[in-house]
Length: 217
Image 1 (cartoon, rainbow, N blue to C red):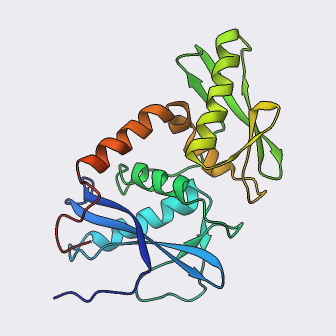
Image 2: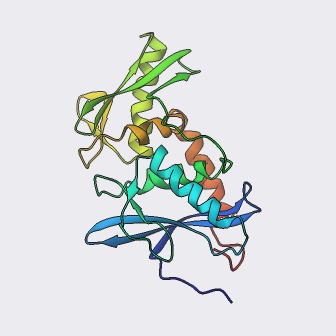
């Protein structure tokens, strides 16, 4: 029987990783000295599991800008944190599930803060104003583009639990007052389609997918 580790609270679960023999992967959270730390872990004994965990850990550092929280290695794996030492849990959970869809040999690179938007028939961009404040803009400045820029701001507010700015419908702010370009770029597609994402999450929960299907967690 495998040994159960004290990993804190599991905040997200990928019950069947299609990219690694259907193993289950958990994202765990603990708090050390007041700072939230996060760990990708699996109890699977599959031979490719360590490589998969290492890839997803690396993906979180590249795609979300996270950093190693501990200097020395721990038996359960590499704990990560955000440089601002804040939690950003909702954004992290969504990104984790999306990153689990990548093959372990997939290239990892920062996503740009600009993307084509079908409803606007043009490009939308998130412009960092410093101090964790971002403004959504339509590159083409059409009426549809301006509406979609405001919708993108609302999407990020929900997806990343950002603060809306009174009187500025196109601006949102990270409460930690720190810029997070990596988070914004990685989740821009989700913020553009936040309603569909929330419906997907509701369907997932209703089907019981977040319950561990076996003893490997």
